[in-house]
Amino acid sequence: MKRLSHHLIGADQGSVMMFSDFADNGPMWTGDGAREKRLAVSFSEPFRAPPLVHVGISMWDMDGDTNQRADLRAEKITATGFNLVFRTWGDSRVARIRADWLAFGPLAGEDDWQLY
Image 1 (tube, one colour):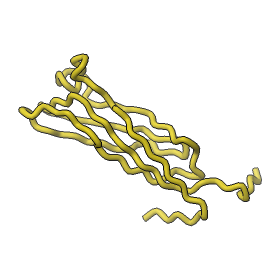
Image 2 (tube, rainbow, N blue to C red):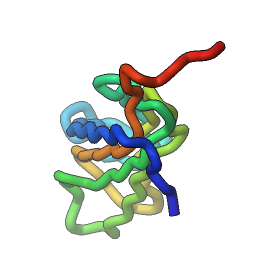
Image 3 (cartoon, rainbow, N blue to C red):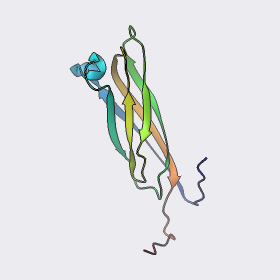
Image 4 (cartoon, rainbow, N blue to C red):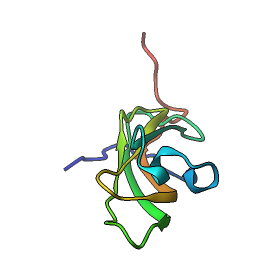
C-alpha cells in the first residue's frame, strides 16, 4: 500500500499510439526481430515524488489466426515520467497498440520549504 500523506495530490493522464507495425511490416507484425517496444512518457509537470501509475490497452489490432499475447507495464517510474513497455511473444502478430495511462501522486506546494 502506498500512502499519500501530502495535502496536494495531482493526477495526470495520457494516450499513446505505441506502434503501427502493420503499416511498415515491423517486427510486432512479422514476428521477426525484437518483440518489445519502449516509449518514454513525461508528465505535464513533475510530481513531488514518484506517483502511482496505471496503464491499460485502449486499442489493440491483432491477427485473429494466432495466439493473442500481450504484456503492458510501466517501468522506471520517477517524479517526471516513466517508460511504457509493451511485449509479445510466440506466434502472436500485433498490428498496432494504443495505451492509456493515469498517474496519481503528491505535488509540491508553494508552502513547501527547500532547505538544501
